[in-house]
Image (cartoon, rainbow, N blue to C red; front, side, top):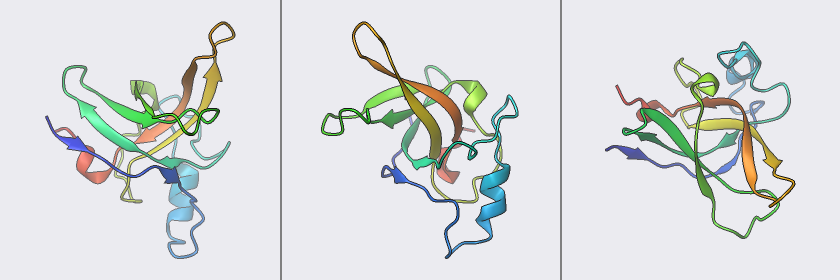
Length: 121
């Protein structure tokens, strides 16, 4: 099994050092055709390919519990972007959703793009 890890941080597509990526970021869309960047910036993310499930998983931290360790979540196929990653780092666009009964956080997925070394094929 190949594992690829990346630090977690917010990604700002309008990086003055790489202006050529502005249009690329703005044009990223998930499989439903929804834009990735319309509602906020993506995050650099620790990601890996899960061979057993034949899909990606990412490590996300609950924004309400920043001192707690992150949790691995399976990325739905509909959120995966199947094009070359020009930024060079795995990224995810998501927001947290909380269960009213136990307060458990689950991600609401917008987009995920694997890093260049994350392609399992």
